[in-house]
Amino acid sequence: MLTDVLNGLMQRYMERVPDVKAIIQTMIKEGIIQQPGDVENDHIAFRTMGVPQLGIQSLEKIFLHYGYTKKDAYFFPEKKLDAFWYAPPSPGFPRIFISELRVPDLSPQAQALISGYTNEVKTDPVDALDLDDATAVDHFLHSGLWRLPTLEDYQALAAESEYAAWVIYNRYYLNHFTISVHNLPPGYNTIADFNAFLERNGFTLNTAGGKIKTSPDGGLLQSATVANMITATFASNQTHRIAGSYVEFAERKPLPQFAHLPADQLRREHRRDGFEAGNADKIFESTYSSQTGK
Ligand code: OOG
Ligand code: NI
Image (cartoon, rainbow, N blue to C red):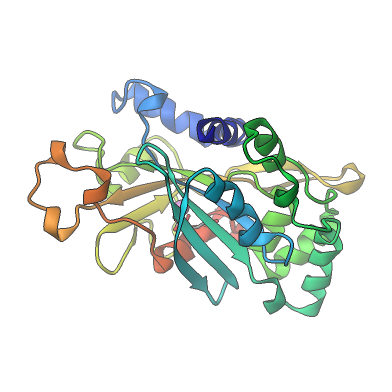
């Protein structure tokens, strides 16, 4: 079941991103929510390597199988990324955002570094999975795919693409989950107010392009923490502190034609849907050293 796959992802994510539990506990302490299950998950996100046997075309098969619908495409020329978002089979499930590194756009050296790892995967691994078996899917999403990178390769990749370095180590670990703020109580139901709550409680926000990323139509406002650092073990048992995952926050305003509805009648379909390239471009930087080094 889709629920089992999502629960597996959230469990591993919560284990490696201390901010997740800390934010939820602080929300409970301030009376914003009563229990962890009250958090509305706007979307989750994955990162992938754009090589023929992997990338979006491979990972998306899992979620298409579980009833997701492929929606809009986004392109990030400077970061050399492509992305799509996927609408869930029903509103109780999070949207999914999957991005992919445009590997052929990198330098020959970086391409050779990446294929040195990804060529270990000979054929699309999702084709070999029994997609109805949620345990097998959970295991796959948390498996190595390729051998542990060396610290030297990680650092060489990071010098050209911090996204590439992130994926070579973190693979399909959840990159973030996203707390919907618009249905929270007054005082917390805007990104501005929620950011203030987070900073009051000592959480560090991504400042790339400003703490609040706003879509040109004004309907989608997002912010994110800077990634929590993890102690990564590289080949030959070398360890190094690198960026793990982060937490995002989203406020979706009612679409103009539903703006007159009272708050208790507003459902997901009445609000701004999808994503925004200009917002996403800055949110990616939550794992970049320019943000994690602050
Ligand atoms: C994804 C960044 C974009 C959004 O909601 O626009 C994003 C990433 O960091 O991999 O999450
Ligand atoms: Ni996101």
